[in-house]
Length: 361
Image (tube, rainbow, N blue to C red):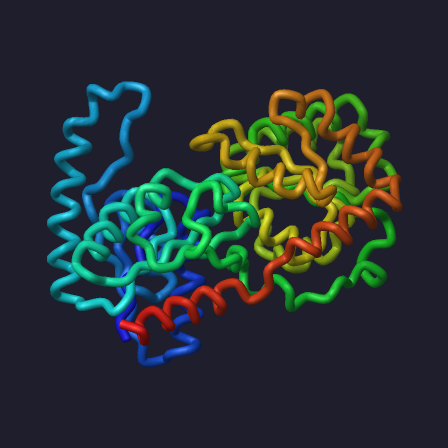
């Protein structure tokens, strides 16, 4: 069987795509897999690192703010569709898998028009533009949240959740051995989150004593690390606060955490659900169609997480976290409710749907 997988632009698209590919190879070691990405985007580096071949298209996103600049974007889109048609003729895939992003639109549109069944995977609670455009051409649409009938035909939807890091659930909590104090895990993504970091910097500069009984793991992201480290040093390098640009041992850090502060990206939320971690979500305002707020509200509306809006983070984020850490009953409610939203073995379940489409063809 041959599988064409397309999508990218951000880690939120790339990671699920690679996870699905890995699951396909586990189920079918003889499978041939080819990725299609956008030239110059993150997937062109990350996919080969994962051991897969990728072909790049000149496709780009539309300029919504200045529509008159989109003539060249349309030209590149036409070029990309022509190029991907040749790729399909040469590779002869049995199934196409689209996970969102610029390249996914061109690749899956061409595949569907050439008679290849396609499956879409939507990571967010508010569907992306690419997947909404492709919805009528898809045979199946795997989603991470209930209620996606408002975007996609109900008969095509399969609730699978999002694939998460494969080693995430393999670490048992070593809380009793490692740390008797409450642990607050603060993560803003690989690049970091300015608002979250500013709130922490302000707190350790002016309210350091509030953290005295707490172990804080503060992942700043590479972009903000130097300024955050300077604030930590100015506060006297408090031993109970770890200031790190990147966490290479995320499974262990999650296992120790009593409360997580995080952006509301699809992958982060899927991990929080799977691990049953009480969380304060701070949706990024800098994403298309405000989809992180939609992701967060899917949990908040079920009393499975607490929301602090980005604009209010400077004032409310750390006080909310400190209060919550002292509220054992609320932490237990969040833990119980967020676990109910977990979707286990997502990558394998999606891969089985992909293989079923190929067998049917």
